[in-house]
Image (cartoon, rainbow, N blue to C red; front, side, top):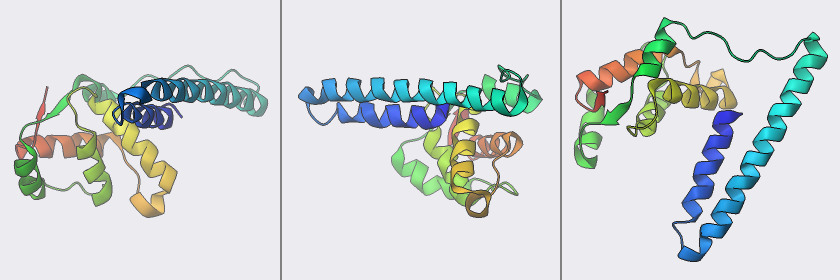
Length: 157
C-alpha cells in the first residue's frame, strides 16, 4: 500500500508542472492520497487483528540481500541515447521477467535505494499477478542491478 500511495503522490506532484496555478490542486491531491493511505493502513491493521488476534508486526529484519540493496543508490551512468542503445547489453536474470527488468531501470534515479526499487517492482508484479510478470525477488533485483552496472548503464553508489 505504501508503494501504491507513493506512485499516486508522484502522479499528483506531476500535475504542478502543467501550469503554475495547478500547484494547489497537486498539493490537495497529495494530501488526499496520504489520508487514504493512512486509512488503508488502519483497516489493514484492523483486519489483521480480527484474523489473528494479534497486532500486526511492525516489520521484519531484512535479510543479507535486502541489506545490500538498501545500501545501494543506483544512478544512470549515461545519457538517453547511450541508455537506449546500451540497455540490450545488460545480461538477463533467470526468473526475472523482461518487463520487470525494464521497470527496474525505469526506477533508477539516483535517489531510490536498491531496496526501494525492489519493493516498487515487487508491488507492481504482485498487483498484476505472477502469471503476467512472475515473482520479483531481492536476489534477482540485486543481480540485475549488478549486471546493469557491469554493462555501464548505471552506477551503484
